[in-house]
Amino acid sequence: MTRIWFRYLVYALIFLLVSFIAFLKLNPPLEHGSIGSTEDKQSVIVALGNKSMLGSIHITDVSINDDEVPSHVNVQISDTEKGFTLTDTHALLGETQHTQAFTSFSLGPDTSPLAAKTVAAATDPAPATIYGLSIAEDTTISRIKVTYRYFGLIFSKTIHV
Image 1 (cartoon, one colour):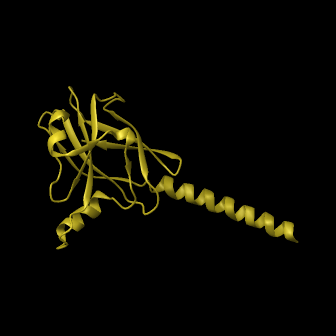
Image 2: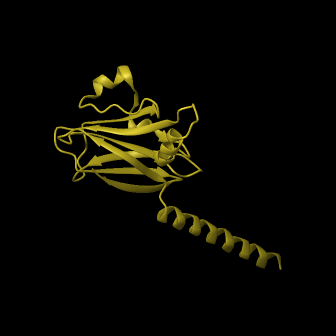
Image 3: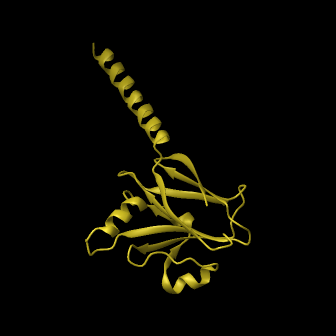
């Protein structure tokens, strides 16, 4: 009798795990918001966030156009009052914006850029933290592919500029 209950418990846990993975694959947690670019589209900044309430997103790779590795990639960390700085050189950002390499960066839970717009529109005096993926390249950027890890699963999102 005990073995039967144990077997049903194992089946239920496997079903829950498969259901959780399927849910994550159908509803990936990475969201992007506004996209800013220079006129020649050689510098682009994309607002990124984690819409999930659980776990952090760890960005593992960023590529542009046809899976080319961009020469300058950083994450700008700002707030809804300051916004982002769009520049063709990342050397200028060190003085005005806090930047971090994307490989050592993780997006915490509930940091959706769409929720930040709602916070910015509200009368709350405390600005929300926002995150922007900043890319500068010598060629025109038409597509950005972000590969990231969430709960040990690998996801990929393509953002068209």
